[in-house]
Image (cartoon, helix red, strand yellow):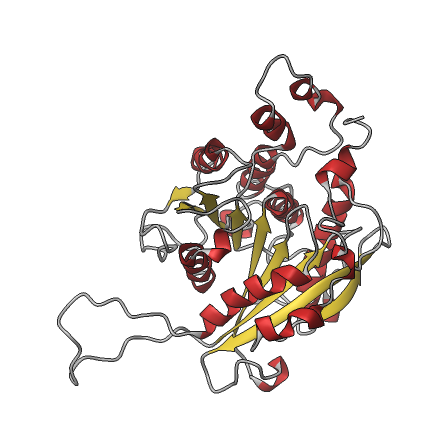
Length: 371
């Protein structure tokens, strides 16, 4: 029965009850001043998908809630968000809004000497930036059509990346970040590896989004893995360690794997050699990776986040050391596209409440500012 109904066990779009009838309007007050809207896109197989879009403008003369067309040319960070396996997007929007609201605040300057005087220059402000979150509702979740499965969610992830590239054409001032929570971390890693493998050698950015290949993926500059796990198989072993239980022996029958190790290996391989690349300048950049580990995670063992970090290091990513609450800026010794990994353990956090902790929110905000 577990083998036959594994999709219903892994994907729970109707838990808690009435999740699929949630509305963005029900969370408007909690999200202010961030305004969210629902948009529709289609996967390659024709499945209709819902996405929730919210953004803020930081710095410059524009207002945080002003339309993007009125803000002029700015740096842009596009975040594609992949949720966990339960519930729907609207209840997650207040938490995502808390990140956007923190980005609106000026970062505190780091003081290394005596208090500032009139002779000291003021601390540098972050460059004018528009932060846009595109939150994907998988097939079968919220108002999306279809039924969830691993092959289906892979198509959904490809669809939102293609939509992001069409809507926000890649350019020197545009950065693309993937952010996945729990199951969504596996979706994000798989999407990043597929995007890197299919990325053509860089060409001058198009003037209009309509000039892009409709299925093209943008370059991925950053990945946030919030409470990730190694694979469904590894989770079976973690949840049912007793050798006398049959569940640990079901891995050969799994139709859903979400193998983060395999995805990371594909991502690293694509960043070192591709069929159409002959020089390092033509290779897709290795992204920065932030791993958020919940110190009191009741589902995923701590060894999973540690193993993902160790694998990144084995694959040539650069370890980032720094305060546990922030993603440290890139140093002169390691260029921004060198591929950096930083694991942060969020104190007191359970599996689904990393962002309820100030440390978790600061880590995400710091990472996005450095994207």
